[in-house]
Length: 261
Image (cartoon, helix red, strand yellow):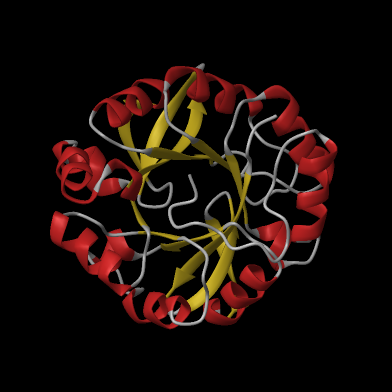
């Protein structure tokens, strides 16, 4: 039996919750505050917010949203997008974030991982890895899948954790938003490569997809977006699936601990 976390993923553009397919073709969903409150009430262990245009505009615009949600919702929050300095991370943590997720900034300056980890603790330092499969290798992308880094995903996961990342959020862009299942081979290989929790994202569309993740990988958590946003699955469905596979999931109504570890 292992503890398994259910994370609601909320991608935000200009204060609006959106959802795309393979990180393109974004559709408006609604007010991220309302969806965050709903998912928390329905038993999400954590919330994950990403400003999807933060790197493009060189800033994270989620500060007020984080403050608003933190004042009403009492589950841990991971916030990503545009984090390029210790100061950026500190501002988001001061607004109510429990963790900050690094992506583009970390690939450009890997020392940033160590700086944030040493300043705020490894539990607050998360590295988000977005990857596509190319010529037999999973390659790391940034800027919401727009730019190639030349890095191999497995190598980058090891380096990121060696530098102090306390968690990996792993998204297979090829699977993301399709609801046809996850890249289980990728998840398994990354889990085997690091000693920190791995959050699997990209592809959950049915309870069977989550069941396969639980059976075939040692992932610590799953991040779900489109299946929740479009009411294809509920958090009750996900919770029941985890329990049915013999793992522990926080019961509805229990208080989540900060950091979600």
